[in-house]
Image (cartoon, rainbow, N blue to C red; front, top):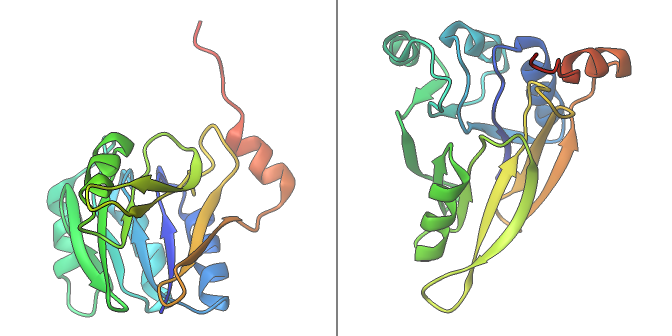
Length: 185
């Protein structure tokens, strides 16, 4: 089973939808969103793809009540899990949380095949030593919304456990405009 992992969309529906569209063209069958959606209506842009979307909130949560209502709507592909999620997809145990320090702690337990996080907008795929003497895979897809960094997502195959950071296909000037950070004065 192939999956698309995104995080930190920060209300950028267009780039989030472009990432999921690209991932679906590569065979993605589900989407994991590691938080910072902000406005729940942002997720409506993913309904058209028909893929299950497992989402948690981050530190920029927006309206959690409406986020849970969106997931409860008839025919919705949104599965809202709250602060974190323990799910099984493709025979793999997956933990989803927003914060990297929390993700690292969960990866260290060795209880999960895959631990996904976001928050710092830095795309990263790494192995973490765990308590069982092995290693756990910890993934951060960066910011799909292009906030302070180029917009990225992770495409993964749960059968082979191979994952890659992918750039969101968008016009270069669009990315530049989105990632420009104005200094605070």
